[in-house]
Length: 143
Picture 1 (spheres, rainbow, N blue to C red):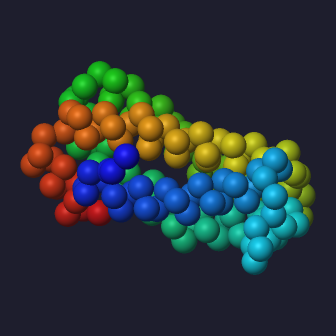
Picture 2 (tube, rainbow, N blue to C red; picture 1 turned 180 degrees about the horizontal axis):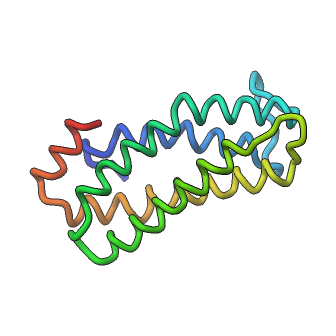
């Protein structure tokens, strides 16, 4: 599905988040050129979070704040997603390379994957459906 131009930058950033989610999961083979040992995965994940995902969450929350009140389903999803942002932020900050377990990384990878898929498959289509064109244009200018 082709994403509205206003949401395309966030969707492109989601690709990197999904790759990180895959890297952290135990049911996915290692990627060539990316860390494969738990301590290195934790370091890589924290660095990527600090360099890209934190800012990504901020951008999303900026447009979410402007989207409140458009539709009750959007409002419910925004609350859920912002809570997930807080949980993900805490979990990424808590990653300790010296003591990180495969289970901890896998859980974080699954949570990140589910989070991104919810935004792409549920929230973004609702935003595209219910946001008036001028609001979508504001999003485009913000991103």
